[in-house]
Length: 294
Image (cartoon, rainbow, N blue to C red; front, side):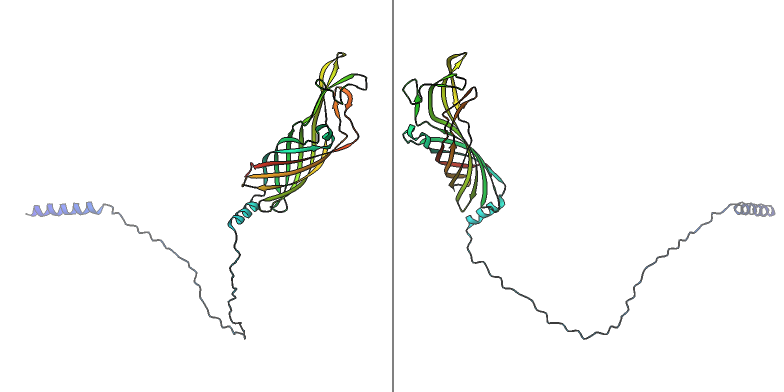
Protein backbone atom coordinates (compact mmCIF):
# COMPACT_ATOMS: atom_id res chain seq x y z
CA UNK A 1 0.00 0.00 0.00
CA UNK A 2 2.76 2.33 0.87
CA UNK A 3 4.66 1.28 -2.19
CA UNK A 4 1.71 2.24 -4.46
CA UNK A 5 1.52 5.75 -2.99
CA UNK A 6 5.23 6.23 -3.49
CA UNK A 7 4.98 5.22 -7.20
CA UNK A 8 1.96 7.48 -7.79
CA UNK A 9 3.67 10.42 -6.15
CA UNK A 10 6.81 9.88 -8.19
CA UNK A 11 4.80 9.75 -11.44
CA UNK A 12 3.03 12.98 -10.56
CA UNK A 13 6.31 14.74 -9.94
CA UNK A 14 7.76 13.56 -13.25
CA UNK A 15 4.60 14.65 -15.15
CA UNK A 16 4.61 18.10 -13.60
CA UNK A 17 8.26 18.66 -14.39
CA UNK A 18 7.81 17.54 -17.97
CA UNK A 19 5.01 20.08 -18.70
CA UNK A 20 6.78 22.74 -16.72
CA UNK A 21 9.78 22.65 -19.11
CA UNK A 22 7.70 23.16 -22.34
CA UNK A 23 7.72 26.66 -23.90
CA UNK A 24 4.43 28.34 -24.33
CA UNK A 25 3.64 30.49 -27.45
CA UNK A 26 2.96 34.13 -26.58
CA UNK A 27 0.30 36.18 -28.45
CA UNK A 28 1.50 39.61 -29.80
CA UNK A 29 -1.06 42.33 -30.45
CA UNK A 30 -0.13 45.21 -32.88
CA UNK A 31 -2.07 48.45 -32.69
CA UNK A 32 -2.16 51.15 -35.52
CA UNK A 33 -2.92 54.71 -34.74
CA UNK A 34 -4.80 56.52 -37.53
CA UNK A 35 -5.03 60.30 -37.46
CA UNK A 36 -7.57 62.00 -39.79
CA UNK A 37 -7.38 65.72 -40.45
CA UNK A 38 -10.32 67.71 -41.77
CA UNK A 39 -11.08 71.37 -42.45
CA UNK A 40 -13.97 72.95 -40.69
CA UNK A 41 -15.50 76.17 -42.02
CA UNK A 42 -17.33 78.39 -39.60
CA UNK A 43 -19.83 80.87 -40.98
CA UNK A 44 -19.96 84.09 -39.10
CA UNK A 45 -22.55 86.68 -39.71
CA UNK A 46 -21.27 90.19 -40.52
CA UNK A 47 -23.44 93.15 -39.93
CA UNK A 48 -23.55 95.55 -42.93
CA UNK A 49 -25.28 98.84 -42.77
CA UNK A 50 -27.19 99.34 -46.03
CA UNK A 51 -27.14 102.71 -47.74
CA UNK A 52 -30.22 104.27 -49.22
CA UNK A 53 -30.32 102.48 -52.59
CA UNK A 54 -33.10 102.94 -55.09
CA UNK A 55 -33.99 100.46 -57.83
CA UNK A 56 -36.17 101.12 -60.84
CA UNK A 57 -39.06 98.78 -61.24
CA UNK A 58 -38.34 95.73 -63.37
CA UNK A 59 -39.78 96.09 -66.83
CA UNK A 60 -39.83 93.50 -69.56
CA UNK A 61 -39.12 95.00 -72.94
CA UNK A 62 -41.30 93.55 -75.62
CA UNK A 63 -41.44 94.02 -79.35
CA UNK A 64 -44.21 93.11 -81.65
CA UNK A 65 -43.10 90.74 -84.34
CA UNK A 66 -44.96 91.29 -87.55
CA UNK A 67 -45.23 88.50 -90.05
CA UNK A 68 -43.95 89.20 -93.56
CA UNK A 69 -47.04 89.48 -95.64
CA UNK A 70 -45.07 89.35 -98.91
CA UNK A 71 -45.69 86.16 -100.78
CA UNK A 72 -42.47 84.61 -102.06
CA UNK A 73 -42.70 82.50 -105.16
CA UNK A 74 -41.14 79.10 -104.54
CA UNK A 75 -39.51 78.88 -107.96
CA UNK A 76 -37.99 82.37 -107.62
CA UNK A 77 -36.69 81.50 -104.16
CA UNK A 78 -35.10 78.27 -105.40
CA UNK A 79 -33.56 80.10 -108.33
CA UNK A 80 -32.14 82.81 -106.05
CA UNK A 81 -30.68 80.23 -103.67
CA UNK A 82 -29.13 78.42 -106.61
CA UNK A 83 -27.55 81.62 -107.93
CA UNK A 84 -26.10 82.67 -104.60
CA UNK A 85 -24.73 79.22 -103.77
CA UNK A 86 -23.21 78.50 -107.16
CA UNK A 87 -20.63 81.24 -107.79
CA UNK A 88 -17.84 79.05 -109.14
CA UNK A 89 -16.76 78.45 -112.71
CA UNK A 90 -19.33 77.16 -115.19
CA UNK A 91 -18.52 75.65 -118.54
CA UNK A 92 -20.37 74.19 -121.48
CA UNK A 93 -20.63 73.71 -125.23
CA UNK A 94 -22.44 75.56 -127.99
CA UNK A 95 -23.66 74.73 -131.50
CA UNK A 96 -25.60 76.76 -134.03
CA UNK A 97 -26.16 78.10 -137.51
CA UNK A 98 -25.73 81.57 -138.99
CA UNK A 99 -25.71 83.96 -141.94
CA UNK A 100 -22.72 86.05 -142.95
CA UNK A 101 -22.32 89.04 -145.23
CA UNK A 102 -18.94 90.37 -146.46
CA UNK A 103 -19.01 93.59 -148.47
CA UNK A 104 -15.83 92.70 -150.38
CA UNK A 105 -17.63 89.68 -151.91
CA UNK A 106 -21.00 91.31 -152.61
CA UNK A 107 -20.37 91.82 -156.32
CA UNK A 108 -18.98 88.32 -156.82
CA UNK A 109 -21.77 86.57 -154.92
CA UNK A 110 -24.65 88.70 -156.16
CA UNK A 111 -25.15 90.00 -152.61
CA UNK A 112 -25.93 86.54 -151.34
CA UNK A 113 -25.41 85.82 -147.67
CA UNK A 114 -23.26 82.89 -146.65
CA UNK A 115 -24.82 80.10 -144.64
CA UNK A 116 -22.70 78.35 -142.05
CA UNK A 117 -22.50 76.22 -138.93
CA UNK A 118 -20.51 76.66 -135.74
CA UNK A 119 -19.35 74.67 -132.76
CA UNK A 120 -17.68 76.00 -129.65
CA UNK A 121 -16.85 75.75 -125.97
CA UNK A 122 -17.15 78.37 -123.21
CA UNK A 123 -16.38 79.03 -119.56
CA UNK A 124 -17.95 81.69 -117.33
CA UNK A 125 -17.81 82.98 -113.75
CA UNK A 126 -20.01 85.33 -111.74
CA UNK A 127 -18.41 88.55 -110.53
CA UNK A 128 -19.68 91.46 -108.38
CA UNK A 129 -23.08 89.77 -107.93
CA UNK A 130 -24.59 86.40 -108.93
CA UNK A 131 -26.53 87.92 -111.84
CA UNK A 132 -23.49 89.41 -113.57
CA UNK A 133 -20.87 87.16 -115.18
CA UNK A 134 -18.03 87.12 -117.70
CA UNK A 135 -17.86 84.44 -120.39
CA UNK A 136 -14.85 83.43 -122.49
CA UNK A 137 -15.72 81.39 -125.58
CA UNK A 138 -13.92 79.83 -128.56
CA UNK A 139 -15.87 78.91 -131.70
CA UNK A 140 -15.13 77.41 -135.11
CA UNK A 141 -17.39 78.43 -138.02
CA UNK A 142 -17.66 76.71 -141.38
CA UNK A 143 -19.09 78.93 -144.12
CA UNK A 144 -20.43 77.57 -147.40
CA UNK A 145 -19.53 79.17 -150.72
CA UNK A 146 -21.76 81.74 -152.46
CA UNK A 147 -19.68 81.94 -155.65
CA UNK A 148 -17.11 79.83 -157.49
CA UNK A 149 -14.36 81.10 -159.83
CA UNK A 150 -12.77 78.26 -161.84
CA UNK A 151 -10.36 79.14 -164.64
CA UNK A 152 -10.56 75.61 -166.07
CA UNK A 153 -14.31 75.91 -166.70
CA UNK A 154 -14.94 79.56 -167.48
CA UNK A 155 -13.36 82.91 -168.08
CA UNK A 156 -13.08 84.98 -164.88
CA UNK A 157 -11.61 88.37 -164.10
CA UNK A 158 -8.77 86.62 -162.20
CA UNK A 159 -7.66 84.40 -165.12
CA UNK A 160 -4.10 84.76 -166.33
CA UNK A 161 -0.49 84.68 -165.19
CA UNK A 162 0.93 86.43 -162.14
CA UNK A 163 4.60 86.88 -161.33
CA UNK A 164 6.45 86.84 -158.06
CA UNK A 165 9.14 89.40 -157.14
CA UNK A 166 11.80 87.05 -158.50
CA UNK A 167 9.81 86.64 -161.75
CA UNK A 168 8.41 83.17 -161.13
CA UNK A 169 5.12 82.64 -163.00
CA UNK A 170 1.87 81.72 -161.24
CA UNK A 171 -1.26 80.68 -163.11
CA UNK A 172 -4.65 81.27 -161.45
CA UNK A 173 -6.84 78.16 -161.04
CA UNK A 174 -9.82 78.64 -158.70
CA UNK A 175 -11.20 80.64 -155.80
CA UNK A 176 -14.42 80.80 -153.75
CA UNK A 177 -15.40 82.17 -150.38
CA UNK A 178 -15.93 78.80 -148.70
CA UNK A 179 -13.75 78.93 -145.60
CA UNK A 180 -13.27 78.29 -141.87
CA UNK A 181 -13.45 81.06 -139.29
CA UNK A 182 -11.98 81.00 -135.75
CA UNK A 183 -13.39 83.32 -133.09
CA UNK A 184 -12.30 83.97 -129.49
CA UNK A 185 -14.74 86.17 -127.60
CA UNK A 186 -15.14 87.76 -124.17
CA UNK A 187 -18.73 88.59 -123.16
CA UNK A 188 -20.30 90.43 -120.24
CA UNK A 189 -23.66 88.84 -119.35
CA UNK A 190 -26.42 90.03 -117.04
CA UNK A 191 -29.14 87.54 -116.09
CA UNK A 192 -32.66 88.70 -115.30
CA UNK A 193 -35.06 85.84 -114.69
CA UNK A 194 -34.60 83.66 -117.81
CA UNK A 195 -33.21 86.44 -120.03
CA UNK A 196 -29.45 86.96 -120.41
CA UNK A 197 -28.50 90.00 -122.54
CA UNK A 198 -24.78 90.31 -123.32
CA UNK A 199 -22.17 92.37 -125.13
CA UNK A 200 -18.52 91.73 -125.83
CA UNK A 201 -15.53 92.03 -128.11
CA UNK A 202 -13.92 89.35 -130.27
CA UNK A 203 -10.77 88.32 -132.10
CA UNK A 204 -11.41 86.78 -135.49
CA UNK A 205 -9.37 84.90 -138.08
CA UNK A 206 -10.73 83.87 -141.51
CA UNK A 207 -9.04 81.18 -143.61
CA UNK A 208 -9.77 82.11 -147.22
CA UNK A 209 -7.94 80.05 -149.85
CA UNK A 210 -7.02 80.67 -153.51
CA UNK A 211 -5.39 78.05 -155.73
CA UNK A 212 -2.59 78.64 -158.25
CA UNK A 213 -0.50 76.52 -160.56
CA UNK A 214 3.09 77.13 -159.40
CA UNK A 215 6.48 76.14 -160.82
CA UNK A 216 8.34 73.08 -159.61
CA UNK A 217 11.81 72.44 -161.04
CA UNK A 218 11.13 75.36 -163.41
CA UNK A 219 8.05 73.63 -164.73
CA UNK A 220 4.57 75.04 -164.07
CA UNK A 221 2.90 71.83 -162.93
CA UNK A 222 2.18 72.03 -159.16
CA UNK A 223 -1.06 73.16 -157.48
CA UNK A 224 -0.55 75.28 -154.36
CA UNK A 225 -2.76 77.36 -152.06
CA UNK A 226 -2.49 81.00 -151.09
CA UNK A 227 -4.26 81.70 -147.76
CA UNK A 228 -5.33 84.63 -145.64
CA UNK A 229 -3.68 84.82 -142.24
CA UNK A 230 -4.48 88.18 -140.59
CA UNK A 231 -6.18 88.76 -137.24
CA UNK A 232 -9.26 90.99 -137.06
CA UNK A 233 -10.97 92.74 -134.14
CA UNK A 234 -14.67 93.29 -133.66
CA UNK A 235 -17.59 93.45 -131.27
CA UNK A 236 -20.78 91.51 -130.58
CA UNK A 237 -24.06 91.73 -128.71
CA UNK A 238 -27.06 89.49 -128.32
CA UNK A 239 -29.50 87.73 -126.05
CA UNK A 240 -29.67 84.33 -124.40
CA UNK A 241 -32.83 82.75 -123.05
CA UNK A 242 -32.87 79.88 -120.57
CA UNK A 243 -35.38 77.24 -121.63
CA UNK A 244 -34.30 74.57 -119.13
CA UNK A 245 -31.91 74.55 -116.21
CA UNK A 246 -29.03 73.49 -118.50
CA UNK A 247 -30.09 74.75 -121.93
CA UNK A 248 -29.88 78.25 -123.42
CA UNK A 249 -30.99 79.63 -126.77
CA UNK A 250 -28.50 82.16 -128.24
CA UNK A 251 -29.19 84.96 -130.70
CA UNK A 252 -26.04 86.92 -131.54
CA UNK A 253 -24.80 89.63 -133.89
CA UNK A 254 -21.07 90.03 -134.69
CA UNK A 255 -19.30 92.78 -136.60
CA UNK A 256 -15.61 93.09 -137.42
CA UNK A 257 -13.32 94.74 -139.98
CA UNK A 258 -10.76 93.20 -142.30
CA UNK A 259 -7.85 95.52 -143.01
CA UNK A 260 -5.73 94.91 -146.11
CA UNK A 261 -7.15 91.57 -147.15
CA UNK A 262 -4.33 89.49 -148.62
CA UNK A 263 -3.55 85.90 -149.58
CA UNK A 264 -0.03 84.60 -149.09
CA UNK A 265 2.13 81.52 -149.58
CA UNK A 266 5.27 80.98 -147.53
CA UNK A 267 7.13 79.37 -150.47
CA UNK A 268 6.73 82.34 -152.80
CA UNK A 269 7.56 85.99 -152.34
CA UNK A 270 4.19 87.12 -153.59
CA UNK A 271 1.03 88.57 -152.07
CA UNK A 272 -2.02 87.93 -154.23
CA UNK A 273 -5.24 89.88 -153.76
CA UNK A 274 -3.54 92.47 -151.58
CA UNK A 275 -5.53 95.66 -151.14
CA UNK A 276 -5.26 98.79 -149.05
CA UNK A 277 -8.96 98.87 -148.31
CA UNK A 278 -10.84 98.02 -145.14
CA UNK A 279 -13.76 95.60 -145.47
CA UNK A 280 -16.53 94.86 -143.00
CA UNK A 281 -18.00 91.45 -142.28
CA UNK A 282 -21.21 91.01 -140.36
CA UNK A 283 -22.97 87.88 -139.22
CA UNK A 284 -25.96 86.83 -137.19
CA UNK A 285 -26.20 83.40 -135.61
CA UNK A 286 -28.74 81.31 -133.76
CA UNK A 287 -27.55 78.56 -131.47
CA UNK A 288 -28.10 76.47 -128.38
CA UNK A 289 -25.82 76.20 -125.37
CA UNK A 290 -25.57 73.41 -122.83
CA UNK A 291 -24.22 73.64 -119.29
CA UNK A 292 -21.85 70.74 -118.65
CA UNK A 293 -21.16 71.91 -115.10
CA UNK A 294 -23.92 71.80 -112.50
